[in-house]
Length: 414
Ligand code: HEM
Image (cartoon, rainbow, N blue to C red):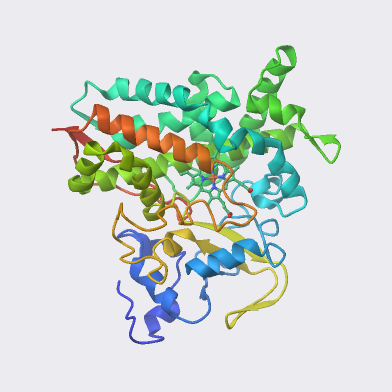
């Protein structure tokens, strides 16, 4: 499908509904995003496949996402959560127990609880442990001629990194990844067989967390689960449900994200061996490759907000309660901000000034320093140990609008 950028309102663009899965059959509809970036105001998608939701506005320009992310009074995270639907199996009142779906002042207080564990200095202390985890996983495929980079490398590494910080045992990693995927990839029928699964999974996670807490009551630890148990917000401890939902947020945010970004970076390097070879010759460029990989492949295609009041934004009349999606996928390739936006360019000026971690508002990613360190070590070790890796087939995408991820990247050793 092609959107004629020269004509202002063709019938095709008027109808353009970003929530229509067929628009994504061939991959990200870049031409549609580019069209929206050039039109005045924000584009409205009617979301015909979910009529009860009332459609959504799309924010696709870098400067607009920057502005709206910082205006939490008007564009609330709490009102309708961050997803495309109000009820993603976990209803809004459950979603609102997580700080990502809260507004200040409660959001600010909760962020402080775990904030100190995620500062760049604290994260740097995990460097050796992360390198060991990465190498353990690479050992498991080192002797294989062919394997799937997503399932066998991208999936287990972040699961163990965040699992070790939470203090959960390695044998639970796979189960926890599956559980969190049920929430974030709720649109993909392969991952979530039935809508009802979410309720079951939620109950299982709450029970699992309850067990983890009981273990810590008997034997206190210094991991994140203990930090959540001991934390006080407004003079009160978090209750079990609040701890369980916080746990889900850390698992989901820590897993989906780095898995998707590592996969995206590696796919680019395998498709463009000249970049891969440059990194092998000069590993000091790897942090730049990580930033450019984050820009080109933001793990979360968007985060949602909802208007807290009627507001006119650049000529668009947004009504109180309307959903507004911040499309990082588009803003990270906004031609008004990035020259040759579709080119992976290691020499880009201000290479870390993208929006993969959000638009620098209050919800800016808590795990950015962890993700950057993890990805750097991971790409370093992969290229050091498997410089001869090549693509070995097509790379299908996860069928969920929220997640910008590949479900498989078949690779072989040359
Ligand atoms: C490449 C990896 C990652 C990407 C692309 C990413 C992206 C994001 C984005 C876009 C947001 C929302 C920003 C906003 O609404 O303004 C966010 C929030 C968050 N991220 Fe990350 N993230 C990554 C890794 C991680 C990791 C490893 C963790 C670790 C636990 C993490 C934890 C969180 C949390 C807890 C929030 C909510 C923060 C808040 O509401 O204040 N993320 N992330």
